[in-house]
Structure formats: C-alpha cells, structure tokens
Image 1: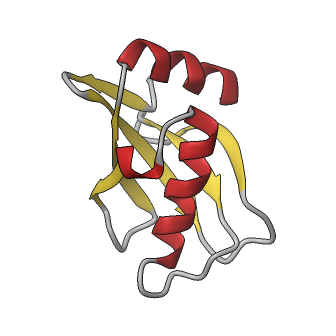
Image 2 (image 1 turned 90 degrees about the vertical axis):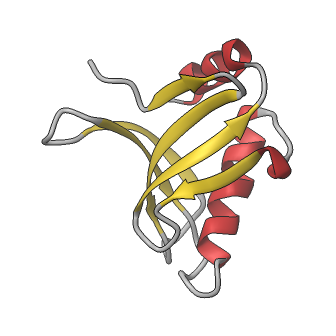
Length: 102
C-alpha cells in the first residue's frame, strides 16, 4: 500500500486531495488513487478564493498534526485539488500523528 507522505530531511512532504466549499472541515483519511498513489483526503468549508481554502487546509492539518501553521506550506498545487504540502518538524512524530488521523 502506498503512503500519502514522503520523508524529507526537515520533516515530510504530504500529498493531499483538498475539497473546498464543503459542509464541514474534516480529514477523511487516506485514499488509494487509480494510479497506485495515495493521498490524504481533506474537506474544508472555505471557498477556493484568494488562498482561503489553502489556509483552511493548513489550519486543519496543523491542529491534527500538533504543529504550528507556520510549519506547513503548499509546495506544489497552489490552485489544484491535488497538493503537496511541506511539513517541518520531527518526521517520526509527524508520521505517528498521521497514523492516528488516517
């Protein structure tokens, strides 16, 4: 089974499928895609306008992972549903937190 993240020297890269304009803010878990890759499915209430949805995704994941919002940034897919987020921190603790939410 594929992982929805890749370890990096400063933390990890997290692969996310964001759905904006949803009824609630929720992390739905890991989804296996048709191409064999895995993404963490996230739904947020914010609209995809002027970075509001990205900010909501970052805030939701920061709470779930126990890191400050400043530790998470969008490295790829700023305007796309499929995003790669860079998460700074201890990779072991981040992976443990990801396993509990997914």
